[in-house]
Amino acid sequence: MKQATKGLSVNVNGVAVGELSPQQVDEINQAVKQEKRLYVSQGLNILGCVLRGGSAAAQLSPVILVVVALLMAIDSPAQFNAHLNENPAGFVAVGILASLLVSGITACLAAAFGVTSYGFINHFTARKHFKIRQILRIPADGNIHTFEVSPTESTPATS
Image (cartoon, rainbow, N blue to C red; front, top):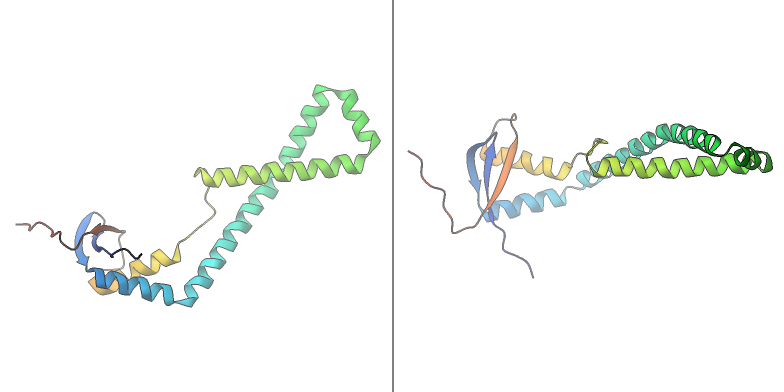
């Protein structure tokens, strides 16, 4: 069941600049959803974010490998030498894969908790803001914030 669309109150840099009716909001949403190039652009942006995250994980991986190997050698040198002499290639391969896994998880958690940003841009929201600027004739500078307004509400008059 489709919910009724509410109108939007538009603020730029904290100053109310106008309102959009529910019909205008629906028109903007439909126009943005029909632009195929936004889907391509958003997909490329997400791919770039994944590649930047992978790059961050690859840069962190050798550090993790060296630190873990050092801690293992300090903890029990005889066992470390035994593992290294038994199958050196397997020991290094497992170490590399484990360090890649740990660095990948670290890069994902850093992005999830806002420690780092990989450059994600929501092109759909940017396009909606562009269309709102066109309809309300707002200059290109300033941050747009929108708030839902029910059709029965009216904004108080200012004197």
